[in-house]
Length: 428
Image 1: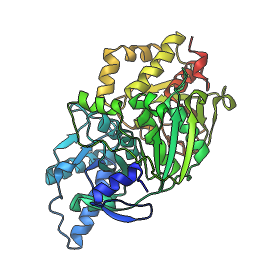
Image 2: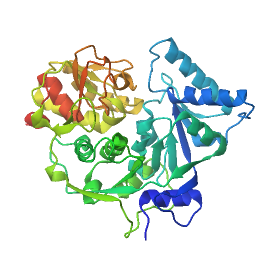
Image 3: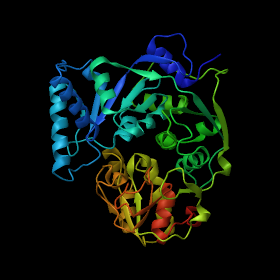
């Protein structure tokens, strides 16, 4: 029996010829990411280990680690400022050189930065202190989030145990129609699978439809696989992925692909031509519906940003909707680019002007309101449509606020109309 893509990566990382679902393996980890929310938690684990007499004087390999400040930057309060200071001290203590500081050149939301800076390669085992580390699965890596204790162990030993997950296969065919985005695809899948339908499973994607999607759209899909409970989302590295790495001056070894006779726990097939604009209603990313059911719902805020909705392609498509409408926003419109690279490109190509002319507020690269941090936090009873990835109670502010998740194009159209709006209505 052949192996899935996730099984192949785990087998190689464990030094085994093959693995099967349910096996427990000790796998070498290639890359580790920490940010200003995760790193302080890892430091707390180190301090506890030191109190108990363990030696945590050096890391297994400081070069396997990279760090960025992204969640609460610029510092929102004293606690966030202290966390950043702790993170800086941690990097100095352990000799971590790949460190992206806000306000000092290139920085941004970790999952987008990992892609832009080619910090993760196909076939690698990549672990981060964030659940949406799954984003890098679109690059062909086994990418997953882990807790502080597990990450601390990896930093000290360079490896961690995995239970080999069962794999669910999602075949995408055809291509998306105008006005539809990768966010609509994953929302459709989440509605079908459910919020716990892929718990500790790998969600593997393939088919000619996958290869028709821009790479940044694939990142969106992989990003939100964790919203079905998945251990990881993963996609094979095709010519688009290889071409991207070449453009970054990066090469890597063997291109891993799933075996033709790989065995999957479940298989799903989607015709991208049939995907409609989707919306996730409160209070779950899996509580999805086609936009017709909620169209016309009045909103107070439209938010375009986050690791899910703040990439360059997201901004480009949202600006396209606004430009074509020729109108100003009727609700608060907050636009937060994911990284400095996205921000600079938006300025260079005139997208910032499009948003500002529509009445938008442009924020610096940060996770911001996606996690209820700042840059657009919601008050009691307020309604938002957001290009982010979660709409749990209190996720973006007050527990009695309401968040509808949608594509950047849908969010842009909704901002213009002041109510949830099908972006195709403005595609003229």
